[in-house]
Image 1 (tube, one colour):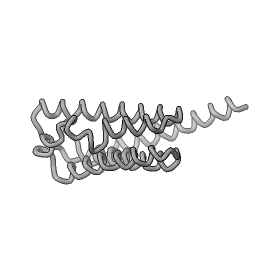
Image 2 (cartoon, one colour):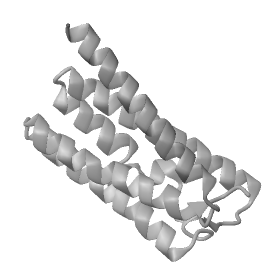
Image 3 (tube, rainbow, N blue to C red):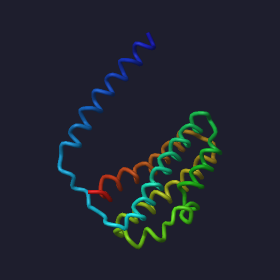
Image 4 (cartoon, rainbow, N blue to C red):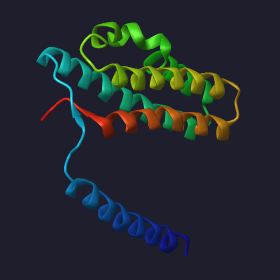
Length: 147
């Protein structure tokens, strides 16, 4: 019974997502194009891929009830402590001010998440993590670096 219910939920979610994603991609891409040197573009893409991997690792650790480890990953790879690692000062020179503000908000949200996760209560930590991903969504919804 539980497997059947789970399968039904999965199929419903897949159908809903397919419909939504079709509508999203059917519209004209109105994101602002941000031109930057190829090397910086590749650097930024590498950073964003690492951000995505870090979020996945954070979720794995949270799922295993290792909130301290999740906090460590967040601060080291996404939080304000990670700015030097990512070359943020160089990127700030070639991206729009508003785009930079979104990136800074993501890094600050990651540091706030790390503090919340260290408190040891998963639900507030999950809510704080949503602020991190919301910044990612906002930036990707508003900007692109490839035509």
